[in-house]
Length: 437
Image 1 (cartoon, rainbow, N blue to C red):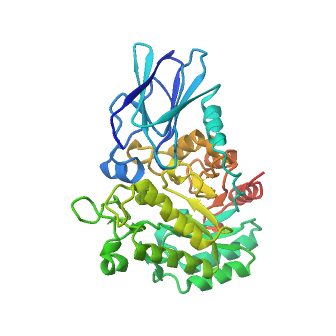
Image 2: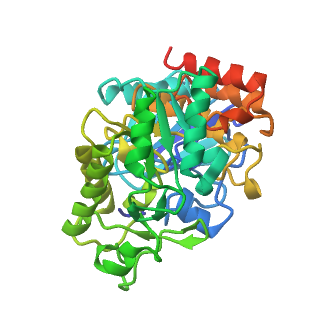
Image 3: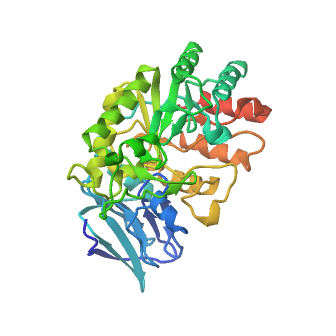
């Protein structure tokens, strides 16, 4: 895509009352409405700019920028105006807004269509509804291992919480094993030393009358993995021929699986068919931004086409009945591919994000972006506001629980259940029981 910007409109505004909605690139990118006198959230770290924002598309200082969507409430009683991508799954222009002497100047580097409405959230909802997608399936209720155990989760931890769900009478449909069961990113079918049997774990969950769920980051590859060592030709390359750098996390540099390579595509299919055959039918696919990074792939296709075809491979492998949750995903290019979608950065046991960067874990950024994307719920997918954490050690747990409940989205508990006090158990039970009402 060209980054030459074309003027779209000059709009008189009441600077003291006007607001502008920026739509971020992916799940973790800050999204929401700002006063024109405010400063929009921007990356505070070069690595986070790659992992959590739109790489290579930096907004100049003093400029508001939406990726595929930007809405303006002029604040003077005039209609809200929305500029939206015309083909959002395949072409996502950056849309910019600057203000000079009481006039908002709007420009874009690609094709957009203009909409009008009465409120920012309602005009965004109207745009989403006009896409004509099928109403998404209700989400199951979930227990997830991540926010208690992180990558140190063990098979015994899963068994303990499985028993506790019965003891505490919690209406959990899906028990989802998160990051930590696998030996390395990319080596999804090789267990870490903390798990004995992935198939046995699924059988134990199902024996309790619950569904088995599992986490992957399907487009990420650890350079130290067996996959990277044995199949270097399966990796997306940069223009100079080295493996594309997808940022850094878990203390590792990250590479990208080239899902357009026939053998890599076959491996991706094998992974998900195997997990499905073992009894898993709820899949959280995370760090999906990597699949949409620009780079040199086996097939001569653009990055968004490669991304969508990679996710379609996963869906075909798990079957139409399995539930697919996306996370860290480019938002507009994911339309029509997922049952549910994370619509905010990670939450955390704390309020404030590191370095004040609203793409980073924390309850404040998760609430800001989660509320800003409420218009997507039940129109594009089921919104995932991220997990409830109700244990006593969680800062402002009451406020976080109120936000999760208000979204009416995917309800997932992520505590060691036996560490919950009376308030924690009661709140967890109420939110799970009320899910989807």
